Length: 477
Image 1 (tube, one colour):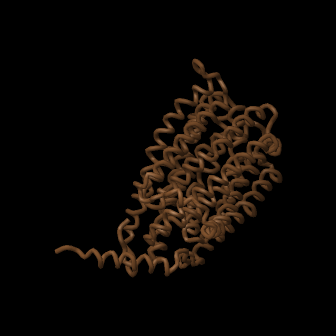
Image 2 (spheres, helix red, strand yellow):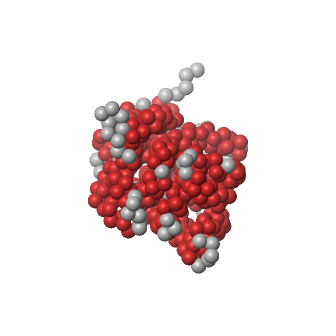
Image 3 (tube, one colour):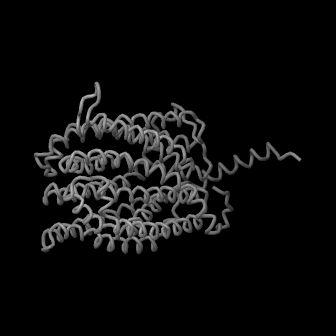
């Protein structure tokens, strides 16, 4: 990122260039990351409607269980980005190490908890008895992979916050290709590998995600990529943990609320039968692709906003966020239009031999594709607030939009109208429109860019260090 004077706001073209330069590898990594799910969906779709429904019932549960880890990761990456902007190398490395420590401990706790209570969770969701065995096998294996999944997620977040977003791309590309090869081997069986159906898909993903996590953490310890981790950095620093915990708890609640809402929505849909669940599951594959791209753009925006705030450049941070929001809205609105037009063909890619699922999935996709731009706006606003440390505001917006707007509308439209399942689908665009209006009003009235996480003393001490270094090493004639 180009060095900036504290009193000068760079041109929009420079900010746009910085955003796209950082966003490109992040989006690419996100696309390959979602390819894990696309690969699983591609092969599971060959097993038919019940297999797709079994995986669909399992997916929201995983999102709920990993939400605490995501919140802590957001807090950690926020702090690393701001320490990077302040050029405080000591705290940068310590923040990275403490974030890894926290998230690994939390993910292990959730793995054990989730594995034990898997049957009860699926029964609570109203999982049909015909898919219960497959859903249980898939979900339990997925829980075992939480630590690896989150370790790599932390690696990505840290690399992103220091502007090294290219590194995770190479790892993801290799493991996605490996996953595509292993999925059918474990699912259908080959030679000495027994056929394991849906459980085989989960095992293949577990193996490749563990490889990605090990490589990522090894890179962090190598000290060649901007962060120098030492084992002493992992000694619990309770002062930092408390600071990150207080910053991360609102983000954790926000992520939990969003993830839990997916579970509740899935339960609503399950009342309409396995065809509705399968249609939602396949259509959600497209929706998740859009989400991952928008999360990639949001990650780049958050990293740059955080760095400018850490460097004491609030007006530049505000301009950076404005550019990101405009790009997000127009880009994803265009993608929504494309998805609307080609909905049947997109669904057919995942379930080529089931015309009922293709028709139902295309119908669902055409309800949600017009709001892709609105969803992207919400994600970008949330990431901007989080990067500034305004995690409570972001949490409040998510809780309100999800639990006071979306869920009640879904219940009302699906139960108290004659539209049936279409009423449930219609609740998505209506709730998104109302939510984005609220997001924009609160965002414009807030003073997020004036909030400081890095103290003036920390910046001053680093500035003195840099000036002393310059005095001791004067430029040669």
